[in-house]
Amino acid sequence: MREVLRILRRDVGAQFTTSRNLKEGWRLRLRRVFWASVYLAKGVAIALAGMRREHLGSRVLYKGRKCFVSNWAGGESPTLADDSGFYEQNCDRKYIRSVINLAELKHRFGAGLSFYLGNWFSIDVNRRLYQLEAMQ
Image (cartoon, rainbow, N blue to C red):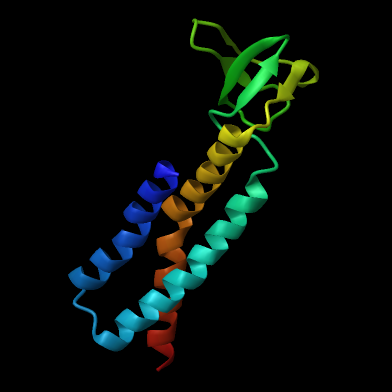
């Protein structure tokens, strides 16, 4: 939960910082809040949909060993590692089983939310705001 709050504080808070730095008027600020809310809901929907698949750092079982995905998450032959020094590239997918528990679901949700908010959220909000500005 702390991870999700950190992500929200970083990326949603950046919208307020951007608005302040651009010295936007109150009407544009209100539109920024509205579109940030809309695209935050989109980010939550993307994160919920992304909970069905593994992400970098997801826990898996590989030939009875508890590992985490360190590269090529969701691919045919991901790279796996663990805390004891195990590291193997091009692992065969038929020997990999996802570990599904509450911590893993929280990780998957946080990874999906972080991806959208960190990469596309501000682009989507600014594109909507300045598209509206050009139309008026």
